[in-house]
Image (cartoon, rainbow, N blue to C red; front, side, top):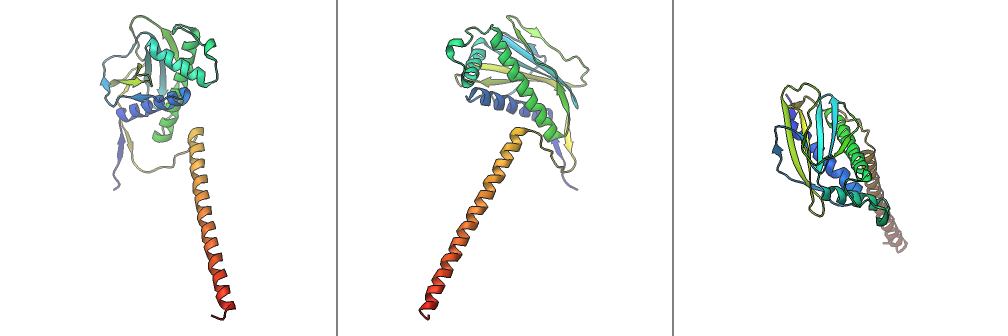
Length: 234
């Protein structure tokens, strides 16, 4: 009997962390990293200076919260807008500006969208998200999931920007294990992954064509040499 593979809550957390890093790195054109050490927490909170949360449900339910300091929010905002071609003179100067909150909400939506796509691709489970909510706050605000969780799990992960400004991502969800009983075909729906796969296939085909071209050239050289020897009667 083939050995089964189990995917745990923490494996799902890693998928979410990778979505955060992927989306923010691509959006800001700057490297975003996260700590290898993860905190086990008992409650999720929105914390100063900017908090953002989004709920998801379906195959399993959960809550994602991201808490930005003013410095990290402004660094991400400036990097993103400048990469989009916005002149510095037109950028917001305070983290409380509506433009900063809108930008972080848009990125949060992209992060959870990438995460739900990965969950569907890797786990064959469909989850849906609601619209992210952004709040500029100066006190902690507790946030809980409006659903019953049998064995709730909560984790906090620390992220760093290229200027070493810190922000945090918190995940709360039911403790769950996905057990892979047998191999299955993954239906690809993510445009980024489709483009990457197509690029790999194109590169592989180009390598094969180049190899064949070299072989044809070698055969032509051998044939020419043999014709020359035949002409000399050798």
